[in-house]
Length: 330
Image (tube, rainbow, N blue to C red; front, top):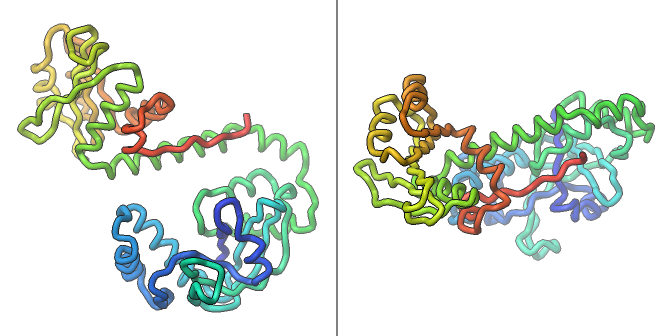
């Protein structure tokens, strides 16, 4: 039987009512539709009608979560809910179908979809080993819990603390922190790949501004793209004058394309080529043997440059790619 963890609202604000009411819930009013009878594609279509301004990514993420709540969680599934106020995980079994509760029958302005739950036991967070805390720490609202983590929750329900030496060793390990940081990089890459060509060009210009340059955009070329000129004065009259080419596509940049870019540079220019599709080996060789400084940035390198300079990014740049800082114990 499946096991799931569900967030009780931001900061666990709904935890007391879920515990006292014997249920879990998600808070969307999809016209009161019977979402348990809908496919994932049907839920996406319904979500779009209710939230027409939502991005494709938001629609896909929320529709998937709604589908899991209504269909993949079944009667008898184990659910885990964390209450930050008491630092307790509440574990129970789903005992009823997915039902819509209208605003007039609840305190929720938009209504909610609920599943009845028989809460069975609690586990103090402090009684869990670090590996279990990490696996339960996803930022997702609703996600599956592994069998190993569920066993840890059951084992720790007595309140016994994990072995101190083992716990300290795990907590001090940098592996979890590094894995979390790398996951963040991959998520930012996913978001960058979804940007329009225009937004990608403006994002590159914004990163350069965050590094202390002033930027200007050239008129569109034959491929519809624009070069970015970065320099200390913003006019390209002071050195260094960096000419930037941005290609936002899946295909790697070839050597002939890079030679064309280099051929358009002045002898005193530096060149920056940003390609989300990367570069062929031949293109990298062309950059290495160029007479002027040429820097190539693939998607991974560009995203890491964004992260390194995001604190200095202006509001326009942050609006294109909103990011939040996550703090971690040193």
